[in-house]
Length: 256
Image (tube, rainbow, N blue to C red; front, side):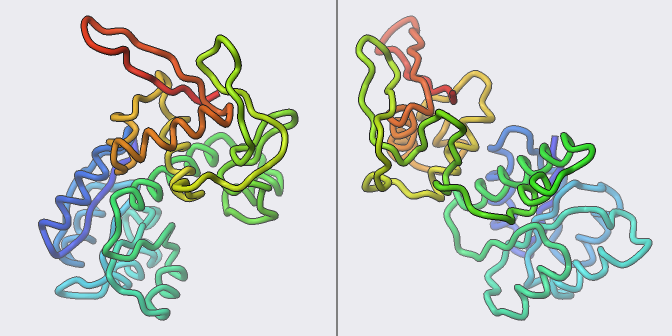
């Protein structure tokens, strides 16, 4: 479980961010702080794994909090920081980068943006734990360096179909099979949101319905369904029907 401390001087914003964090499996909010001093005290006491840190705080800048956190001997100095702020000047961005922030999200933003950053953070943590003697490819993957894959949503393995391929339905099956020849992403589908939905889907052992995917990603149910159907049509996800006691069966999507 990834333990998160939310730092924002606006208690309504802090509660909103906390709810967004709590919607994601594997994350829990352990506390909130309204000022830089409260943030540092909470980090010392709670030792969270991740801090969502605002820059504009009443007593000090969030960058000052970050510098103090990284100071040698500070309890909890290993805590990761994800900056969530309205500050969009280059100096602040550079300061966050130099302070070791794992990411920088500019307010205002859609809920799906924060969800995506958190899911990426969780995935990177899993990859780091799984690596004992990293090769350069492992390091490049963790630091998001090296050549980009052919399709930014995901790089298909040997013999596998990429997301950006044309597809035709397999007769008698609930899953689509990819056809040869790469094409552009269909209208209404973006690489960034497709990556967000893919993260949620691959983390779901029992698959996801469109409603569950929407809750996890912050998308509308209609948008979540569009992306899930896209993956199914591309041959990257299977659709299975779950029958209840009444009504139409529920379509559940499973990553292949």
